[in-house]
Image (cartoon, rainbow over all chains, first blue to last red; front, side, top):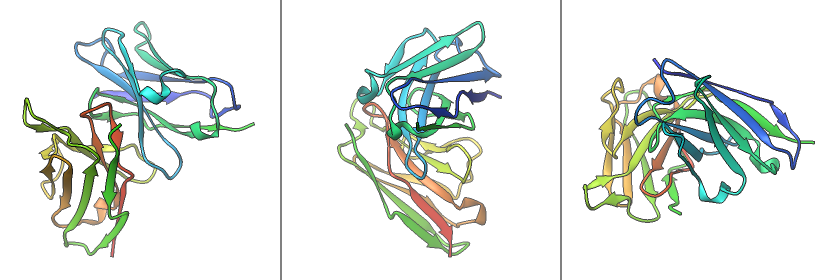
Length: 117
Length: 112
């Protein structure tokens, strides 16, 4: 059973960089044809897919976030990471990591990140 | 970008009755080369991550009760809960994966 757990600061100041990690257990992030995504949900609002990294380390981002978003991985720790630069209050959300490229079958519980001074 | 809309925003249905949620895409999400609709449905309960119920518009995922069904093609899709149970109270989202990925705004389902 694949399990994902997000972690990172719950509060980030405007203009700074939001950094999160997702620890994956029960499966390797390098296993063939696996993809690992980040999805966020502002409080009380709908879901927004951000991007993914695949089993070879290739990345694909939502076009509107491409200039601010970096998704990376650490295969030795079986973790994926997200960095979102120049954050504003609009980036306040619960951030989820999830397994999948087109749709997502395993999700972490999510971590709330608030952007505020 | 493909924009997804859902209707209604919310609905309340008696236990045992049918619940119907509609989802519309701003352009066709039917891929002609494989005749597949690139649409999924998710259920999200309070404080939980979403759960994938259906993909390819009508393929129920393993373990999902058969009272959940998906239909539609092209730009218009429907999620039907044939006999609503108390545990089905949740927000339901449609999602397209034809071009990038985007979600609908969600439909809140409650018990009448």
